[in-house]
Picture 1 (cartoon, rainbow, N blue to C red):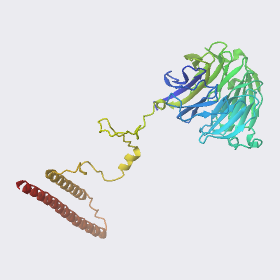
Picture 2 (picture 1 turned 90 degrees about the vertical axis):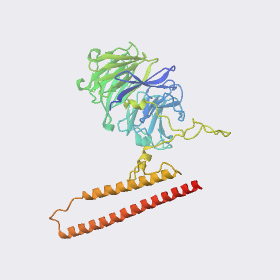
Picture 3 (picture 1 turned 180 degrees about the horizontal axis):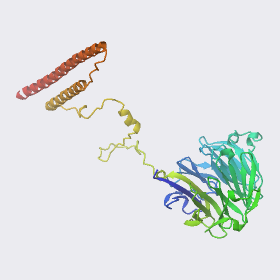
Picture 4 (picture 1 turned 180 degrees about the vertical axis):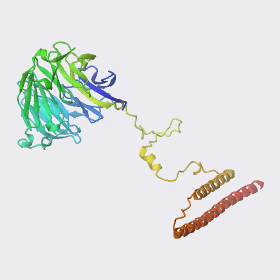
Length: 475
């Protein structure tokens, strides 16, 4: 567990270097830089399982995929979509991809690439898509101020059912007066609380279990991002004036709408004044807050003291912040695969070279198969080669005879260590034991006689060959 890190994925509107870079939240160490994806659209950066990163291009109808441990895009995967993606989300099991293209929601099955459904219930472009923690529902927010909650099972209905109930949202909230900029869904599936922020300066809290609005907190400035801690006691919102404000749920009066004054909220001040805070993230234990804005800065804050710990300069406005608890070894380059085939076939015969080699791939399955035999064959069991010298044959025969005698002596020692039966045993058992011992002794004598006969036979053959060889030499 020593190599587990809190990795923060950062993307910005930058087309010069990397599309996305990954840093260790605690140390600031660079873990990886992903290149070649252009400018990433806001609310589109996601982890595809545990091995890939996916994001949408903000200027082209393309989805880019990188291996987690590689800087370059995967050349074998190219996702072309009907239009520029404005929001993107993956189901927690990475089986379904939900994309917002203008005001239409597209649902794809990733394993097969099939387009399962298209739903056009928003009147303006979709700005954000969020899944519940169990993946059964997802929410879409748009510039029209609407927030729609969908059941994933109904959303994956086949095409052609545009007028059916399968394309109707589970909930429809139209409480915001301007564009909804961000959505956060807490823990609990369909029984969770949902937090939305908008340019109308409101942060609204909904209960997804019954579809009711619980609270509307009105701020003095427009809101662009929202994040809530795991206990859902503190709500952090990013404003359009370069500040991160926090309010505590247990201190809000019991009323449906509450106007929060400037002196009532706690502010994190460190970004450039007037630059919108576009992205927020929290560490796993919620002791550090990460914020990114249009001032090309990513700031890491201590939540308790609201002090700035570290500032990370970027080359463009921050579009995505994604924190993931992951092993740092996953960013290491993969080992080079064994080469089973040559790059080309030669046209002329060439002599062998000392540089020629064959790569042998030994897997764990192969090694396990080699140990299935109970008997342990050492080097002395098999001959090292086929020799023609008579002296070597004699040595091999002597070694084989010595090994058989050692095995026989070992069996004798094991038999002598057999425990004597207790005196209280029945007489019939003693008689049976004596019979077995007698039979065992007889088998030992026969085995020893066979071994001696085999040794004499081998020795005779060796001696006969040696005599024939000497006789041939005299001639």
